[in-house]
Image (cartoon, rainbow, N blue to C red; front, side, top):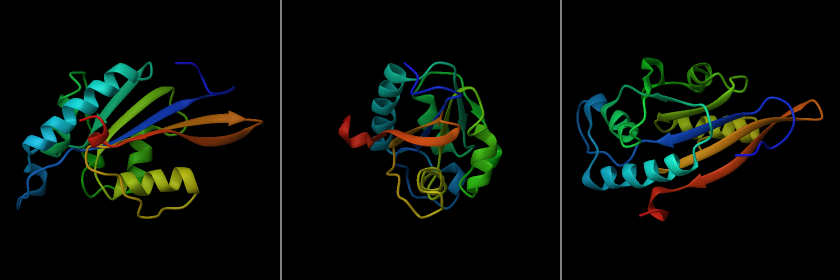
Length: 160
């Protein structure tokens, strides 16, 4: 994919886990049948459009692991980006905005929405990222100023 401008550019893809069952043990909740379908269709779209040199980091929760497995690509599990993670932990794990290439985070609300809000508006707010949806952001430098660009917001139900 062509770059968006001069200077360092990083892509950050935020993928919320697909629909999961209710359950007492939050880390062990599994995807529903609908969630498995959401993960498959989004994974196919990501594989067709992924940026080069994409690192994939995933929460240890079963539902995020199952969502990431739909990609059929290698990924790293990061304990610190689980359901109780804070925005700074996602930033640290991804290396935003200075890592080279791209990072896909498969994670949870409300942290993914708060991260998107911080990067796009400059402050944390409770923005909603739907189950199974993907938000794709890029960082670029223009006239010595770092900018965050929203490249795509794609809910899974548009692909089903």
